[in-house]
Length: 326
Image 1 (tube, rainbow, N blue to C red):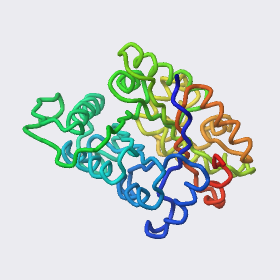
Image 2: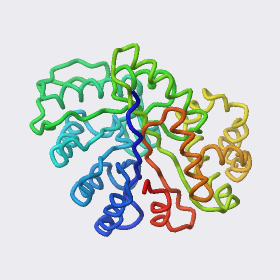
Image 3: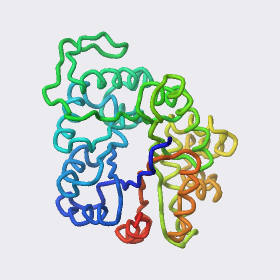
Image 4: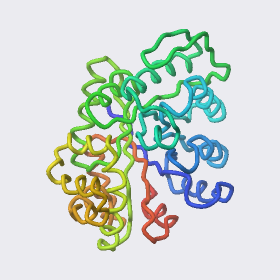
């Protein structure tokens, strides 16, 4: 049986962290089951979740995602173990490669062997979070005699951020599921099927499939399409996402975007993104239309939503209310 559908919201919201208590408590009141953090160039992934663990004690706390490169393996295990002790049974860890921009340009770490790095980090964390003393020569790093002193009191599910087949199969074969991102509801069917097939062949439980879905619950398609092009271009020109969408079959559709972006013609690149692609990748429209669109993701295998409202000039707090399970 598939896991029950979980309804999560991306945090933190805009503004200082110390002012967000009431908004996170309201998520709990609205029936959200999860809050999911991300990590790029603003807040780290763990601090907002630590605050939410106290403010809203029924919410599950997930990372979508923590890069496998930007913390040493032992440091990452300590961060996870500490959060899991603060919120027993309520933590889900999402790890992934992140991107060459975040890892290499911003953190000065070579973006080498991304698949192997995530695989090795997953294997190390499995052992470390279970309380084992780890001495191991992994392909991308070595561990000598590490034993986590902050062992989680309950198992922590580890989800793998996955785009193409190799990582999707790793997520099903060795992870507890996958985190997927920047894809349409129709794309989700293909992607989730690969994860489930790998899990079944490995004899693992039904995997969790968490989709980070970008939403704009406003009845203003012109604004969403205009501003949405900026968001889409910012992601789909990053090499890992470009390769993903080429694999999904959008190579011809996006060839103009990639060429103009490479040539430095930013405005021209935006003009190459068709309205239809914005409508596929960003859930927008009146709240009921958004719910119908989200249901298509669920029908195609998504078990958990990490909704991410895009800042297109509307009241994000009201959007959380409009999209809430209750």
